[in-house]
Amino acid sequence: MEKKKVIEIKDVWKIYQIDLVEYAALRGANLDVYKGEFLAIMGASGSGKSTILNNVGALDVPTKGQVLLEGIDIATLDESDLAQVRGRKIGFVFQAFNLITSLNALENVMLPMTFQGISRREKIERATRLLNLVGLGDRLNNLPGELSGGERQRVAIARALSNDPEVILADEPTGNLDSKTGKEIIELLKKLQKEQGKTLIMVTHDLNIAKQADRIAQLSDGKVIKISNKI
Amino acid sequence: MIFDYFLLSLKSIRKRRLRAWLTIIGIFIGIAAVVSLISLGQGLQVAINQQFEQLGKDKIVIQPITLGPPGSVTSKSLILTLKDLKFIENINGVEWGIGYLVKSDQIQFKDEKKVEFIIGMNPNDLEINLELQGTKIIEGRSLKNGDKFKVVVGYNHGVDGKIWNRGIKIGDYIEIEGNKFKVVGKFDKTSNPLEDGYIFVPKDTLKEVLNIQDEESEIVIKVAPGYDVAAVADTIKEKLRRFRGEKEKQETFQVSTSEQILESFNNIFGIVQTVLAGIAAISLLVGGIGIMNTMYTSVLERTRDIGIMKSIGARNSDILIIFLIESGFLGMIGGAIGIGIGYIIGKGVEYAAVNYLGTTLLRAVFPWYLILGSLAFSFFVGSGAGLLPAIRASKLKPVDALRYE
Image (cartoon, rainbow over all chains, first blue to last red; front, side):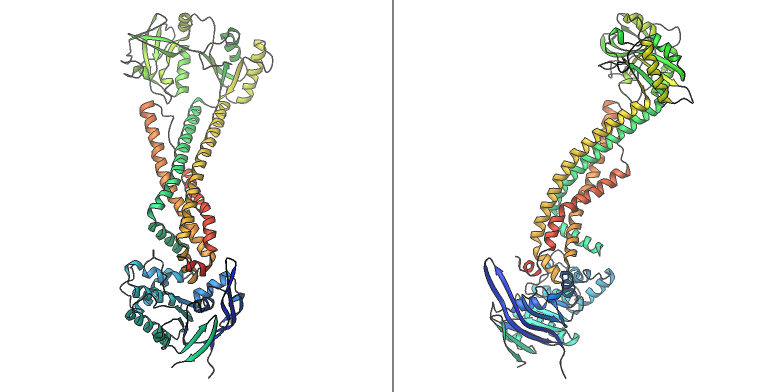
């Protein structure tokens, strides 16, 4: 049976201009991502891992080439549509958690729904359910500063799920955590991928984590040089 | 959704409490100044309008053109005389006319000497004057026909420590130019402390004492019912000019209707209030720049937050609105506090005016449009000042903003 492609990356170039020097972070990268799979992206620093993730997540648009998200070329979208894509189709989980520090856990999870104009009642209901799902049912009213690293990342995961996106993008989600907590976070993400059928794309340099993925994409010098199936 | 953005702004303001307060101070000083000054200006205008209402719209005042206040020396040819008064009284449309003398002179009571305004009036006319000033006799009696060397004094003369160490009592004597006058009555307080210092003397006696032949400092006439006040005023001006043998545009007297006087007062108030508003606008401008400064800093500080919000689906317009609400909110809090402080200042001045200056003219009034207007205005100053920083925030690229440390 043909697996459905969620994301197609076709000969993508991303060139940054830093002062007068041009720097190509991606140099003709090609990658397909299938619905419901767990894909790990590995590579040395500077190989373009994060750049590829940012392009998939519509945080950035390619200089050349195409990023198709469910068949739609993100380069053709305007600012407002890109924001809609980020809000509805994508859930981000960052290495540095990236929670809003002045909002408590519940409010952080509610925020993406605010931008989609969801009613306050539904927001509270959904956010509470998601925080329960990630095991933080008793920390709803704590500010990020009052939570441990692992708890913060759980809040971030709950936030990523709040608009029920197709794809979860995780950029080194365990990078700021100790190994035990890191394992728990990976388990949680895998559980979501399996049980809720989310597509999970994770950038990591930890081979032990990458081994748990369905496929591993190896990046070097802005290109995908190798794709290996589950070992 | 706006409500959610409002909560978001509130949280962010609370996190930066000290800076928010400093910014707010910049606004509320301006608003407090506007509110207190305008409320007092309005109060004064209302009070003066009421005074004219008391005087009535059917009154016309004829005065010689002088360069000083009433009672100052006027050259012989310029003064109004009894002949003028009689002539005016016979003009068609004039119901009655009264003429009186206003002089300032030294008055002696016991061992004290003070210079006060002395009003020389026919006893009959005094009754009319009482009505015009909205006061009444509170002790003793008014002047009556046949009175000579009798006086009725204004309210302040009877109060210990106001004009005299020991207030004048009914039956006391005061001296004007070496002549003893018996005090027969006292007036009640008026809204004008100047009038409360007047001394009323029979006109003929005052002329005798001050050695005045024939003079009226001011003539007030009432227009008969059914006549147009302005038309009667024009007629008086023209006929009196011919009667006195003066050329047009070179009259030595002026004829003003109470409405004209009121209008000129209101014109002056308009100018004063515009100037006050201008001064206040400058202080608000400074406050607005303070908000702008705060918001630029805030945008810089929250660059990462902006990146986060964009990564979870915020559009540029969402970011713009969030920052505009925040700066507008800073402005509005400043406005609300400013209105409160302005109210206290206004009422404080009113209290001081009543208790220390003895005038009820300086009242602070707070019409709804002043309150709502100040609030709306401070909101717009706030969001206006926040506009540029907000645009800058909204235009940040999500990737760059997320990378910001």
